[in-house]
Length: 309
Image (tube, rainbow, N blue to C red; front, side):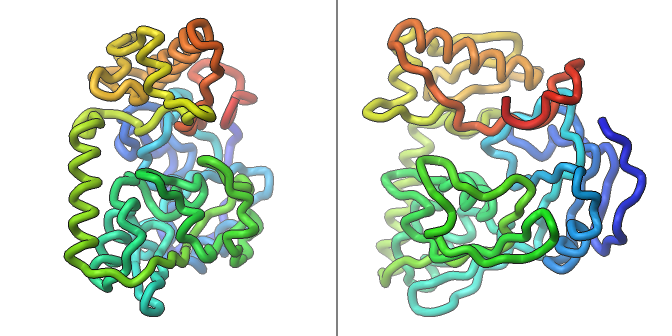
């Protein structure tokens, strides 16, 4: 990794060689060259503005849909803490949410204020910053259906407000630039009764509990659903239910989930995913696309292998 010696002054916490495995759901992978936890938005802006432009920057939320490769992540990983986790009511149907707020907090706050339409966020195991970037969705709804605009600190340190129309949303994808960090977002729902909203949240929670391996070390949905098909069905028909490689396994409960059974490396998990892709390609002629983000360097590989392959 490139040696970093000079940093702008910070008011938050800047940690060299920070292990990332404890911070991601798979509990595997290498370290961040530097982990920065800014004190507030201005601290983040000042840091990025003063950081050498060639240094890569990556935001980390709850780490629920992420494979951190075993060689670690070069540059700076930014993790938004409590200062970015507030959720406030703006008007009768709109919430302003910090980029570090969880989907559970946003949906629960919406319920408390009688705002319906945000219940599906209860089922997205991530933060506002992550699911705004990825157009997260579940149970028939996506972030693009509720987002008005978001505040983004771009790599230069400037903060910009982007309406939903400028994010270029498609299925599990936005056109937000690399190194940009979502620090806040406005979500709009519609009036509802808190009891009915809670009932819908309970229904979603029960459906997830029944169908997904929530108590395992996993990374959420592994592959995007192809047009007109379900990824889990293609994986199942390819004979991959319960398939193992090293310490990684295709979930027997939901075949679009990979599991760290105990001591899996990130290389095990990623290689199992590629094996599944090969088998689906052979049996169904479908090229499954990763939904899980894979970041960092493969252990022992040249530095060029950074980010998505």
